[in-house]
Image (cartoon, rainbow, N blue to C red; front, top):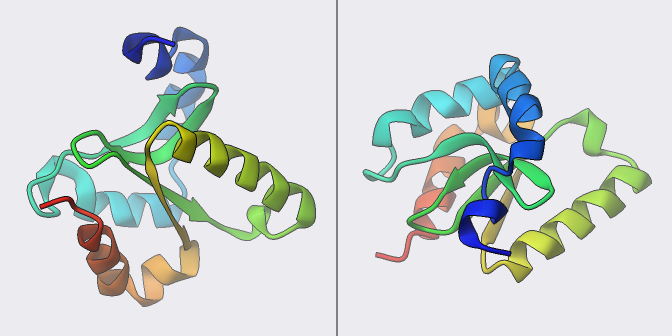
Length: 121
């Protein structure tokens, strides 16, 4: 699949737009620290399409995907789907960082430092 078709495919455009308009509280809070190159000068995108999936945050220069997980991810079916999704993203050469929503609120600076620890330079 070409780079252009792999990222933000047309079939997910409406869904991505809807997700950006309805961020969870944890996504909105973290976005305040990622937007406008606030974290180490890296550009992040929110609700970015990669293949059949829409990821919470994506940094192209670092090839990092950030996924936030709330209660909806805490069951066997969701965990299996998350594993399939993570395997796909990693097969695309991406680093996937997953954080529980409560970590964003309770340990924000640890979350931000972990993200920065995955920067290449």
